[in-house]
Image (cartoon, rainbow over all chains, first blue to last red; front, side, top):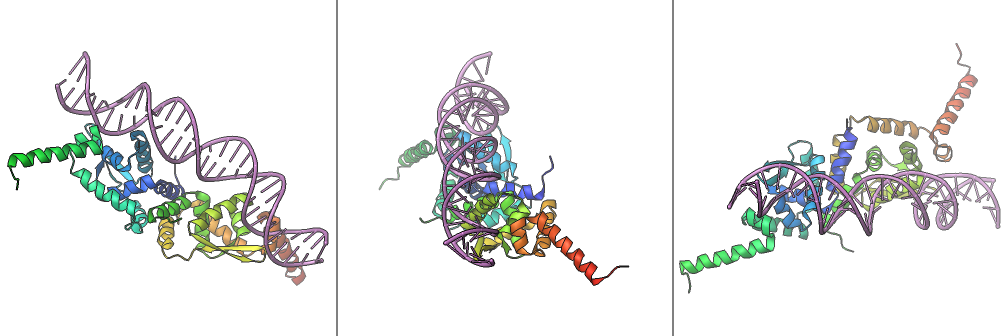
Length: 143
Length: 143
DNA sequence: ACTATATTTCGCGAGGAGACGAAATGAATT
DNA sequence: AATTCATTTCGTCTCCTCGCGAAATATAGT
């Protein structure tokens, strides 16, 4: 199949035209993410996230890299998509949801991937918290 | 209702994410057009065109001006939409459909609006052709 | 007032999008 | 080999989109 440049532009616009996908693109500007990390931020069913990622990939907005069981998603390499992305996100820097997403991504990056994928965000966070506590008490850093 | 900037960006992307609407935006970059002119180029039912124009208007991409029975459509005035439009159309200058649309717009601009609206493109074009012929024979510019 | 006409709104039907859970797949780990 | 586990695919449901024609609306002309 030979897509015209009109079809291409339409496909990109459509791909960007959904909050979950636009949020994903915004997260990926900060760097690659594992599928389960994206899922944790979006709080959608894995199958739903998978479908959204497929849309983004089809439009050339993202690219995926497999590493064992994990799949890492990053922004696509095509030069024509960068203006789209930059433009689409230009007005959203002050958006509450976007800011919350980016903050959550930073926190999630500090969590072990195995825990996050297996247990989900809440449990992984709790696990790390308690681990930090026991480390503290072993150090004996009590007032 | 108070839309977030995320919602706004999504709405604009969605509005651009349809061939008929993106083609319309491309035409409007050359200047205002009457609804029936747009309809003639898209060759869609008037009600369908009306719905597409409503979408574009809602996203702030276009603005409308009423003049008697005619409704003139132009690009919106918001500064934030121009980058969207320029970016979306950046890759489409070589597109066949786009080029054909723009050529047709130029021709349609030369046709009397009353004829175009009432009779449609083909009939309006034919009417002008025969008119030009009679004018020629009156001038007596024969070899 | 009546008619013509440009456009919108309404109602409908077909198809697509987006959500989920269940099952399938593929890749470690045991 | 068996199991665990991240991810995708599949089936299903609901809702939205997009096309149309018919009816409604609004404005000009007669």
